[in-house]
Image (cartoon, rainbow over all chains, first blue to last red; front, side, top):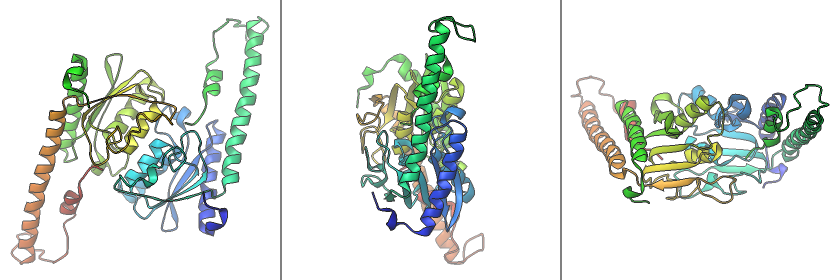
Length: 197
Length: 197
């Protein structure tokens, strides 16, 4: 984990762009994670988490950013590029970054659930692989953590409300009139299950 | 590494289907790797390596199979499914499989360059993660290895021929008449660089 002072003004600019992507995820009710890929001072790929919306394992912010950057450069190799991401990459995204031969990864917040840039495992810098990545962590960590905390706090609040409504429904006093015990509310289940790991 | 006798007739049938996918990669000059995903005895996703053809980091056999299976079931989770793949998954594909919550992975040949199902690392069965996968390796290992060997042998032969042609061209005796030293042949370079790691 580096201190915030080790980063350049340009680094900060691009992490802000990644945070803007995370805001997009927040707007559609997804865990707010965003990423951008930069080549020669320009953003060539953006992505934000859309896993529940798109119903695909692959809709993580980093994977989308890699796909778009690949299209932009017309190559599966992203040599010379840097990825900025608001949350430490998981095992899939870290692996994809190694495969892309990207030069550098700059991380905002740490992931204790699935972080594979040093927290649970360090896939980005494993000497057994044919490519290792320069990793700088902790840039705008507070903002990157805050947006996640805001999301999960709101989710817990909504789940609590849903449970209350459901209990009222099971008493037969619910306004929707279903009143079927165990009928379930897919929205509530989805919400209750929402995590990022 | 399990012996071939530990596998069922159904396992063999699905590995054959994965090999059929690998043949498709071979036909377009890609490293021949194929995969299928099976749910309740039916194939719900197929994929083969198209990395150089599609110019994307993500065009590995397993990733394509996951994307298609996700679409089929309408969920990012592939619980209850099995992936059959001709070559041990790399760090990206192993990570994606963990993220997909797939139940089981059956592997043909071992990958000494990037295998992350036990060879270099075991991402599929890491207890730090929130999901571990049942792994069975060595099914139809000979056929899965043979198709790769055939591809690389042919590639080396073609590269040798290209080098000879290029040398003749540099002597000014080449039929294409370019005769420019160092002008390069992108096809030859691509071929020469072709690997899967």
